[in-house]
Image 1 (tube, helix red, strand yellow):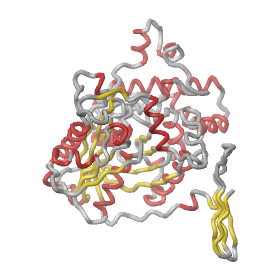
Image 2 (tube, rainbow, N blue to C red):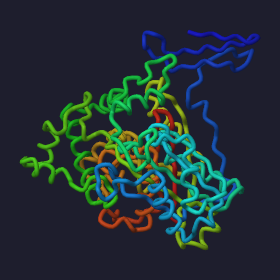
Image 3 (tube, rainbow, N blue to C red):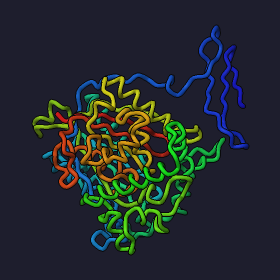
Length: 469
């Protein structure tokens, strides 16, 4: 325990010591009369203020999620080409060119790891008509795609710029060599990824991985199981159902990494059913509950969007996608249940700002690089009823054909996960659903409001509400 005194006030910080025991309490000085007391994460949140002017998404574009090194059609593509593809698609969707863009924002979770870039935004500016214009780069690990929207919206809402292009790319599967031409690439191995985690997770007073991959992320699921009295058989059936449904939705999405559902995979392996396949050697357990089908599939890809004031947006589209607000909380990894806590915080902020709850939403998207997060975050954000969400999943009500659709693109475990770019792909899915342009996996009811919960880096949590006008 570390004590720091300043005058008659005292701050006590409890942190993880060599024993590895965690205590997430923080005692802070309040006044000389009241002394000290424990402050929770939720008490430390600022209250969001409305935007100075309404901001809408007018254009959005993404690349397919692929594994560049393994795919002859895409082999040889570089970071700049992927970002340029997505940016040009977003501008075309908005009906503008680079000349119309005032400011560009570039996001990438691991530019130092995957591309050996220190300032990656400068490598793509000339390619998309941004020569000489201002831009910057940001990185918030797997939350980068969500923050790409937040940073763009705040630029426009402030009045500084009218048209902002914001995009993200990631190539964690097909990474660059430090000194070779970027068309020559190598596999991003788990050993390399582990080194990257070392630079992402806090490691000053705690075990930096905090039991990650997968044990840290099973903590929230374990609590849910105990709170709702689920048996081992029910949990296994739930995760199996989630995997089958997510893979099916990914398999009919032309942008997905995977084009085969689990029934097809089972038949190719000589098995009778998807259930048999998912309980075979092809889908081993990697934790107490989660199997390989419950984890992200790393791939390469990019996405971008164009935002502008809503009143201006009507000059370009009849139906702009208005960004009503975004809650944002950072709870770093040394704090137990950091993802759960951050989700509560971010949702609380956007709920209080907009007056809307998860129950008011028509679609829920979430960062789900551990598949159970679909259920856990949807319930925490009140999109699904507490303690009943698992029943909705078992009844297929969270499919694109159901009444409470969740993660209709198949999610990071089956659609694919390209780190910083994945959040933009979630927005793309929501917007295509709102426009009625999701083709084979189009939701059957009109989508007026959508909520997107972002998570990344073991710390950044966001909750965004968008509206189809």
